[in-house]
Every structure is written in C-alpha cells, then in structure tokens.
Amino acid sequence: MQNLIKDRPMIFFDLETTGVNLLSDRIVEISVVKLSPDGSREVRTRLLNPEMHIPEESSAIHGIYDKDVENEPTFRAVSKNLYIFFEDCDLGGYNISKFDIPMLAREFSRVGLTFSTANRRIVDAYQIFCRMEPRSLSAAYRFFCGKDMKDAHSAEADVLATVEIFEGELARYSKYSKEQLPEEVEKFPETLDEIHLFCAQNQMDAIDPEGRFRWKNGEPVVAFGRNAGTPLRKIAIDNPDFLRWIMRSEFSPEVKNIASDALRGVFPVKG
Image (cartoon, rainbow, N blue to C red):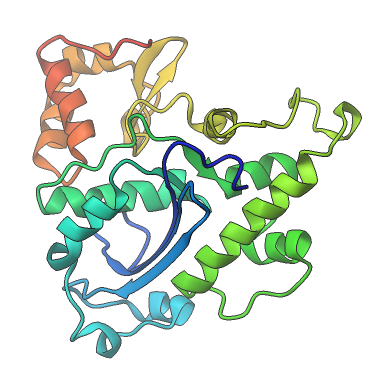
C-alpha cells in the first residue's frame, strides 16, 4: 500500500456516535490512522463529550456510556486541531462515504468550519469489498487477514482492522486475472486516483455529501422524503416552501446552498 501514498498523507478514520442520524446525533469517539509518504504511521484515538445523552442501544454496540465521556472534551474543543490534522490529506475508512464523512462534516459545520472532500481522494474499503466480496467488517477481516477481530465496534479496533483489510484487498485483487474479476469490473485499480474513482462509483450520482440531491438523467432531483425523485426545477416552481424548509432546518451547508440557489433559479450543472 505504501507505493500508493506518494504525494500526501492518507487518513483512515472511524467514528462511534450517539446514533445514525446525521442531523441530530454526535460523535463520541474518533480514531485515526495517518499514513505518510515516508512510511510513518500515526494512530490517535479520542473520546468526546457529545453534550447529549448516549442512547442505551448505541452504548450496547460500542460500549461507550455517558459516564465514560462526561469529563472528556467536546468536539468544539478539539475541532481546530483536528481540522489541521486532516488538512491536505486523502481519506480512507470503512463505509465512510455514506456515514463517517457526512457526520464529521456536520460536526465541523456546527463550529463554523467547512470540511470539504473536494480535491481529496477517498478510499472506502467497504465499497471495494461490496463490489468484490460482499461481507461485514468482521467477515472482511477474517477473509483478508485470516483472523477474528477483537474489540469489534471500538473505534481504534475498527480503524486498525480497516487498514489491514485495505492492505489485504490490494494484495489479493491486484493479482486477479480478467476471468476472476466481477463482470462489471474491467480491471482492479492500480493507483490511488483509480482506487478513488473505484470507491466513488456508487456515489457518482450524489450532488451533495449527504446525497439529499442526486443526478437523474443529467438533471438534479430531490432524493429524500415525499419529494424523492422530483426534479429540482419542478420543486422550485411548484413547491418553493419545501426549499425554504430545507434552509430553516438542520441540513448541511451544501444542501442549504443548493436549495437557496434553486429559489433564485440557479441549478447545479453536471460537469
């Protein structure tokens, strides 16, 4: 894998949270592995006080309870240092495209920082695995690493396992012949840019990081709620109150900007 990381660091990261709602839930633990072009590897793990009750059903999964974080710093307290740590880094993780990246971006937006994936290459070991060998994280670890995970659902164990899985994926699939690859895969990617595109294949139609608006036949459409599938242009004319509601509600800045632009008759253009 080190041969891929040549021009800037890559950060693999994993979040444990109070729940899975990107709008209302908060981070309770973050663990990162920073891989640098010189071959060095830095691991950091930090519990965070979410400033809200951690539901029992979430604690049952990751083992973090209110008492564990009551004296820990808030996300706001660590946000600037964390933002700098992530600066000019590519991103990696397990299912980060759909959850961890939007959740992290949401937390940064609450403290006035804009966390963008623009110009970052994203490696999602989950997307690679789903396209090549659909499995869970534990099964992926067993399959690629030949051993069972310990302390599953702790952020550090999960993110360290993800790094090993990605290394295992590279070792295994780079040797595959055309006959061994899934029908829709021409060849397994060899460079970080190619892996970024490979991982992003299922996200290519999303316009914003949360996927609230998507491309359909080259046109932007709403992708959630009762208006799912409705062209944004039609919503702007027939139901502008829906866009005003988005602007008043707890959506990401990117989603609000799209809604605001649509009310002014400005719509996303697919590049």
